[in-house]
Image (cartoon, rainbow, N blue to C red; front, side):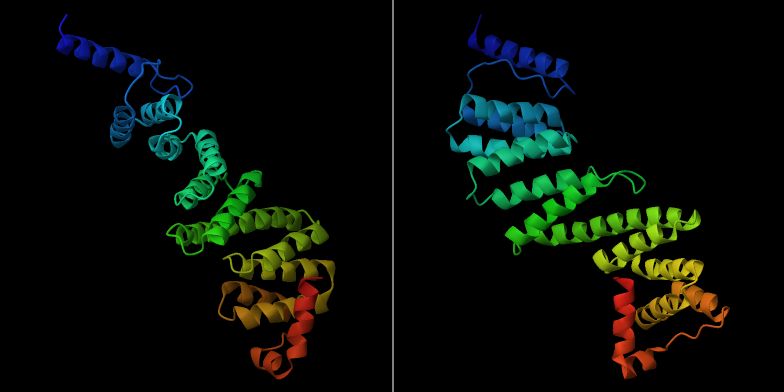
Length: 278
């Protein structure tokens, strides 16, 4: 058998093995001692063909066969990225965390932190479910921005942080509305206060203020409702939520201080804010 035929058989056998393992990340390549450059290039080629499981297996093999080479450090991150693209987020996070543990001072560390953050971010559930994953994603995104504020990953992390906060605020609003509909007004007030206090820059803030007005009116504490409505009108004067609060209170004969009144007497606004935040 000629060397050319042996090489061809090796390629065919490898292809069959990889096809059989397609979609099974737990399967590893059979150990065949191979030059590091070839393993890495095979992984890169598989990545370009979007065969992400296969790519991750090759990059893992680089580290297994050549653990002390410069290629191994690159392959560790490439395996993390391959797993991310395959939506194997636990594996991607594990690979990136291991890279950080072994190479904390590497110039690629910012990317490793970013991969961890976006892997958590991609697992955010809908607003009706538990939000522990969302909070973990927010913490990880904040870590990217805090550690590497000038890195190319920080701007995207900031954008995703805004969307994550909006998601968390949406969860608070969903629970608060349920409490309000079912007459648990104090519990509803607590949820809406959380939105105004912790997620004040999100799109949910105007509604949260209006729902606070509704909750206070339902409890019969008109002065609190009036003060919250004044904050809503001062910050979001043209919003539909302010119009709803204005109609609700004026129907009860309650006058709301205008923006000029709050500017003339800042203590009115200060008392209103104190009321909102307890």
